[in-house]
Image 1 (cartoon, rainbow, N blue to C red):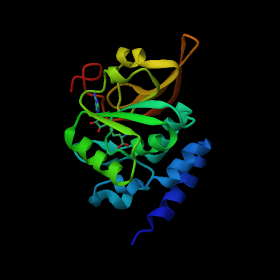
Image 2 (tube, helix red, strand yellow):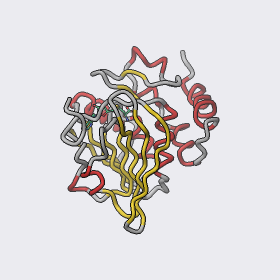
Image 3 (cartoon, protein in one colour):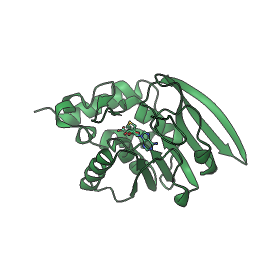
Image 4 (cartoon, rainbow, N blue to C red):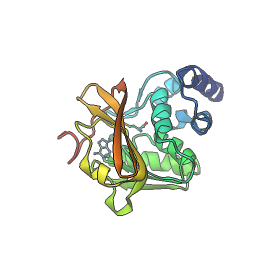
Amino acid sequence: MIDFEAERLRMVERQIRRRGVSRSEVLEAMRKVPRHEFIPAEHRRAAYEDHPVPIDEGQTISQPYMVAKMTELLALTGRERVLEVGTGSGYQTAVLAECAGKVYTVERLPRLAARARTTLTRLGYGNIRYRVGDGSGGWPEEGPFDGILVTAAAPDIPGSLLAQLGDPGTLVIPVGGRLTQDLVTIRREGGRDRRTDHLRCSFVPLVGEEGYAS
Ligand code: SAH
């Protein structure tokens, strides 16, 4: 038997804290959420390793550090309404649900969406709303959002997501080419948007109307 909890605590120390993520709410969430429960059985033993892991349909669960870093960039206090584009396994969704008030998550692939929802419900998360479809245009009926997190790579920042970002608000999104991107934040405050490029990254493409064609 693998001691998943011990692996998880080690992951937080070595991969996340040591690399500079310091926000206590984020570290606490990363210690709590059982990442292995979001990974198909054949890859589960790699759940706490320092890289992305396949979750079927050619998609991946992001590297633990990337999940922590993106969550930290949202600077959540526990009350926010957050939009997540790209539910995938639902792991990042759970971390957001620990740190925010309510999470709205959108996934274009129905099978992944259904599996994520089953896992998150089984784990007891009640502050998540789910939608299946193209999230590159956001979720207009529920905006504006205090935070928007995109977990797939976009060629440019989708205008719809900017339109659904509140003030104050923070958008976190990988922007760039199909293979590598910059992790970008747009911080909106007092009617102004400030863009910061944080680090190089590599996400699967955001496929849709305001993303890549396929
Ligand atoms: N946060 C997820 C990352 C999954 S990979 C995790 O850690 O498990 C990115 C996900 O974005 C994939 O599941 C992919 O199907 C989804 N995706 C890509 N384009 C999308 C779009 N336009 N709308 C919604 N989801 C999209």
